[in-house]
Image 1 (cartoon, one colour):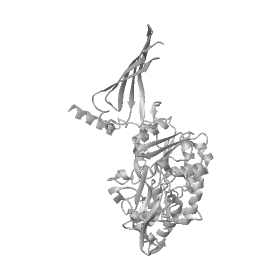
Image 2 (spheres, one colour):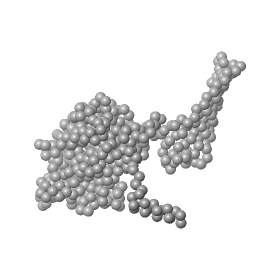
Image 3 (tube, rainbow, N blue to C red):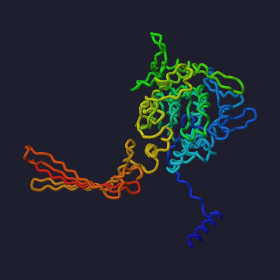
Image 4 (cartoon, rainbow, N blue to C red):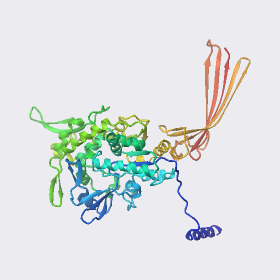
Length: 538
């Protein structure tokens, strides 16, 4: 009864504004952070140029596919390098609410069921606010039209203006840029084209899951079959794979994710096709054709030669775009020559431990492909390598830059943005919270020494040394640990080491140690080491 009365009193005081809401923790000493997403990672609004009406077209649930086709379907303009909506009265705009964070946080704020599938930087933003970052002071976002080339001048100008505004808003502090996926290519293009601006405003650049050398298997099948933004039942919330396919054929950004042709791949990514051809004897034979990254263009051209879309009753051809390919060659030159300016530090986090498409195969020996234009209707089969499910680890870690550190983290391409291992690494690199000099980002643990005692005695030709050391290991949550490690009983282990004297019958020195590993408690594991050594003088 007393607790209920106390609750009532607190409710009345809150209503009378006698109790103020607790203010979030803010650390004024933090350097600002700018988050840059990857492909499909920004909210896009369509503005009607005739009446000024604005509506969200990526991402939305109701009427999603129809709005996507009418507002986002585009054509590439080789004279400007820009992809322009088929609707001449539509302009695509990226919203700037919450200092740019609104566009890259939750991509459909109206979604309730399945909300996780539209969360982009959401978990990371929440985590960073806990560390003391503040929106508009030390935390910002940069959304962009992901249909465009990563070196489009309009995007470059917007990013330059963003860096300057973040620098000024934070009181002249240099910026930590954190990019994800294709955002890493955008940042690298900017660094290559505007090195002086990058050097002036940026302190650290942290790339996460960036396809520095492309995403070979995934992009090859994207040209032929389209792309799904999410997997499983959550695909029902998004536009059809076919509608996305038609958009991406005219997007320079997708062509810029093709496998790098001049990179020395450990295993060359291939496009393979089982085809039925007439043999020398006049009988049909089934053979497996293999095409390297630079040689598969003819296959894309032939497969998409008859591709069209119906837009307002007009059949518009959408073949594989060779004009975009010309544009992309210039982008690749920019990316290959980009260097980290002096005074800026670069870090790379990439995903591992997932089967990741590397080469792609169509047809089979039993069911070969008879018409290349039918590839659009075949289900691709992937030959996989290690990576994050989308970008091979080999590609992501080959940034071609001077890096302070490259750290592999087990995780899925988009899900890696929610990994606590990544959060701990970022917290360490951003120097947020209490400094942690013992943190190891690669193995993801912290060793905290708590006690150290050593004594030594010398008597009658014997040297006796005793050592007592204790420390705590901070690692993953208890639920993630092996059962033996997280058991409720201490683990006791002993070890002995001896070293022989001048002949095999004499003993020069010997040491014995006991290690006690206590059960984990509140994320920490206590370890005790007790050792004694005895040595005989020569």
